[in-house]
Length: 542
Image (cartoon, rainbow, N blue to C red):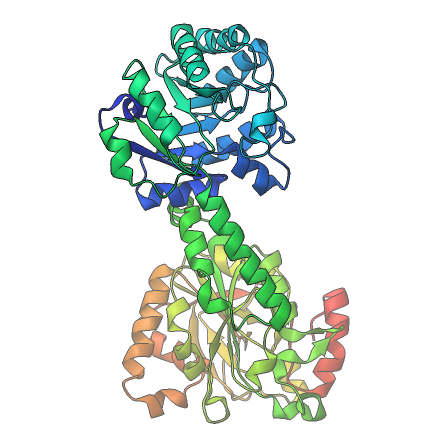
């Protein structure tokens, strides 16, 4: 059923219906979730939310923009508080057409002069527009609508202005004959006496809508007995939001921390839920191409780095500054430059210092007595989908993860064929044997990993493993299953390094593809750290 048809049905139903006020998309969604069948887009509340007075200080186009967000955010009909129609008959025609375009089901206009003043502010001093002029607005609006079910409610302000029952009845009848779909009879009294007197005389000539803001103590059953059509709760959501916002702001200003408010406000996750984040996630899976920007990165950055001496005296290795920024920041930025935005890291040594924004963290609190496999084990929740696993002390250029992601294989590792450089410098390295050495032909062939060793004197060495492992969704599943299997013996898993895991994968018959590449720096010494600034500036490999 169309929104317009649903609103018209609510107004014409013999049963009492209720509309709840909302003033933006978020509050509109809350009203719908609360179970209401329709929304009152309150002029007072929208003005308040915009920080202006309810005196047409917000233009009608600004109000319509808010109403459009409300309509887009909900599936229930909206009746807009259209003040006086924002001008004469011509403006009224445009308002109706624009509301229909935005999916708003109806508009309520009041018979005061433009610009209007809120009914509860010096009401008896407010002049009413001539009956003939207001009837012209109603007729113009009805003639302008293209949807026969679009609703125009005529709001009678005779009681507000102090003109009495006779004037209220005269105006309501004129508006009925002009084509209004319902009459909203308003009153500023704390009792419903004026409203009930009108209804007794009016009968059921046209549905009657009421707004019991002032006579709120009246039992709802009274409205049912007198066969009113719709009750509008006109501003309570805005007023309660104002109360809550003021209390929260004052508490934080007083405390200068969040401890006394965090448990009293909804979680950020709940905000995301109301916004419909889950729908966007499903749409992304449906419409976005599978590309590098969907991949994840996991950085193993738990080590202390004692071999760097004074550089790690008061910080973990991954937070050593290179060109004024921590190693981990350089790593994260390079992944982002490669299109990988989802980045996690396993921290350990002085973990409280590892707090860069935009990174999800896992903790290896046993970093001093465990190896990389145990760190990886702590991050099992993120090991799914396309993922690039990297050491937390390696600087590299964006082409490296891009190359790894381009290979169609469950497991891919980068290998630097210039392995003699590491041996000549006498530093520890993970040397590898591959199915063939680096050559012009190897760039076109399916090169695979055969063995990993730390023995530089071993026969058949073809290069140095660079500390990265890319896994596909299937590869991630295999790796997770391996880690869980090895985790059955925690003490055994704790002593395993990443090369050991590569060996387990090969032992189980899984092929590990090799990409020969270069332009990286493993920071294992003070000299490496000093050289790193040059690497970041010029991209020269060590």
